[in-house]
Length: 236
Image (cartoon, rainbow, N blue to C red; front, side, top):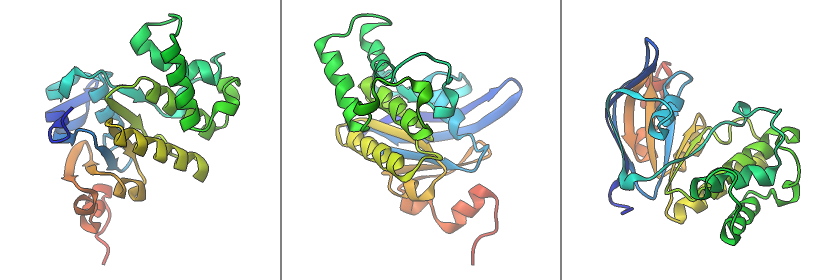
C-alpha cells in the first residue's frame, strides 16, 4: 500500500443490529501504514465500526472500501474468548497462519518461524506450552495480539487490546503495534484511553454512532470535542 492513500475508506456508513442502528452516516479515511485510534464513550459505535471493516457486521447502507483487497486480521478482547478452549498459547498463535495455510494444515518452516517471532515480540515464549484458559487477562490478550500479528495482514484491527491490563502487558502490546506500523502494517485500534489515542498517527472520535472529528490526535482530541463526545460540560 502507498502511505499517501487510504487503507480504508468509509462513505456515509450505516450499520446496526436488527432495528437498532449503531453507526449513522460515518465518512472517514484511515491512512495506510499508520496507526489509527478509534475513540469514544461506551456505546459510541467503536466496536461496531471495527466489525464492519472486518466484515463481521454488514453495512445497511453506505460503503466500506479496503485498499488492495487486504483481508484484515481482527483481534477481539480477551474476555470474548472462552476459558474452556483446550488450546495452548503456541497453538493459539499458530492459528494466525491459517489465513495462509488453511485450517489444520501442517505448518511450514516459515510459518513456525513467524509464530516464534510473534511469541517473542509479546514476551510469551516462556508460557507457550500453557493452556489459554489458565492465563491471566494480560497474558491471554498478548497471545491474541500475537495471533493477529502472525496473520501478517496489511490491515490489523484491534478492539481495546489493552483495556484493563497491567502496565507490562499494555507496554508490550503498545510496542508491538508500533513495530507493526513501522513494518508497514495499517493498524486500527479501538481505545477509551485518551493518552493512548494521543500517541496515534490518526484519530476518529465517535459519539452515538456518528463521527465528531477525524485527523491528527492533537487536532481531534481538544477539550471541547472530547466533552462533546462524552456528553459532558466543556471544561473551563
